[in-house]
Length: 130
Image 1 (spheres, rainbow, N blue to C red):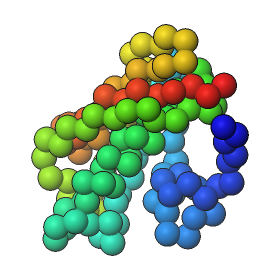
Image 2 (image 1 turned 90 degrees about the horizontal axis):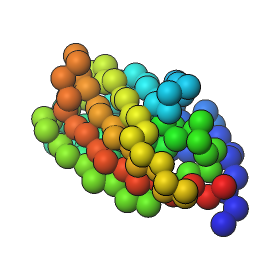
Image 3 (image 1 turned 120 degrees about the horizontal axis):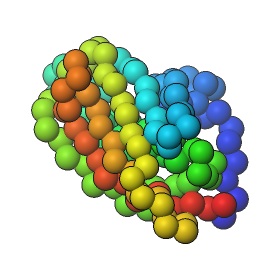
Image 4 (image 1 turned 30 degrees about the vertical axis):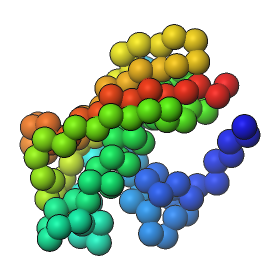
């Protein structure tokens, strides 16, 4: 499978007019972080971030945590745990780190925090296509 970057990713793409435009920091220790305020138009219930958006953010930060290992990783599996409702327009911290790497499979743990409290987390298996 050939993967191509075109800057239209829903989460991080600069050219996606309706995207979230998240700016991730990739660290040398196989981790990644970002801050974002999710706009109200991505809510589920009134003033609460939609669960699909939460899953998407955890998925994306997991992929970015793998960037020092692979520039072409795709999610093979993700298990999300929702701990607290996340209010829209609130600053969120996304963080993820690689916890294991075996050949083509990279294991990642990710968290979404509000004021240093975990509101959602994920265990992600990333498949390295390189």
